[in-house]
Length: 254
Image 1 (cartoon, rainbow, N blue to C red):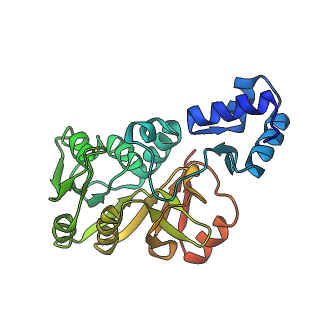
Image 2: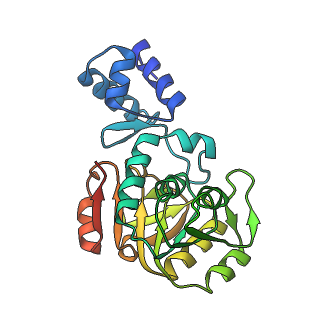
Image 3: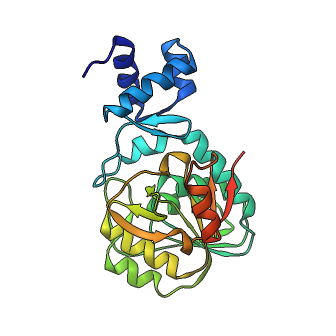
């Protein structure tokens, strides 16, 4: 493999964190940003890590997502910024659908002071959060509950959501590929997500920077089906052009 001890330490750090910025690695290893970038380039060439704008992560599986607790802590600060940005644009007295994901759960926390919301969700964690807001009516889809993240999937959830037409769907996603497709891992979850998109007047996508160019097996939608996207850092090429061509309004949370 021909890696030096410093590169092995960097690799171990990335595997522990699952994802890290260049700045975090430089601080942890006590080296310069230039050294980290050089080591990351070498490890990426060996297929041991995958680079994204401003950082590095472990190579992604196309068939299995990270565990819920792991995803909840991964990029938590960025997800919180995204959630605040989304909540600032959601009006009072509107109807929403929130799907499965730790980013949508962060959005739910940011909506705790909104009034007059009617929320439909297939995410029991979202439901538990928003029932703490007395001015929010929460309706939970029926279906099969996944033990690993309390998401509700299956044909019963699809049939339930088809009854509604909401103002805004607030959705997360596992990955956005360079062809402009939005992708996820569980085909049962994807069927529900596709129905959510179809039953909303506007679709807002919330995804942190690590989701760009992250592969997953099942296509949910394309960027052309999204009205607004909220993220925590400027997207890398070719995504700005893809978003522009698809007519997606981009919000980078400060």
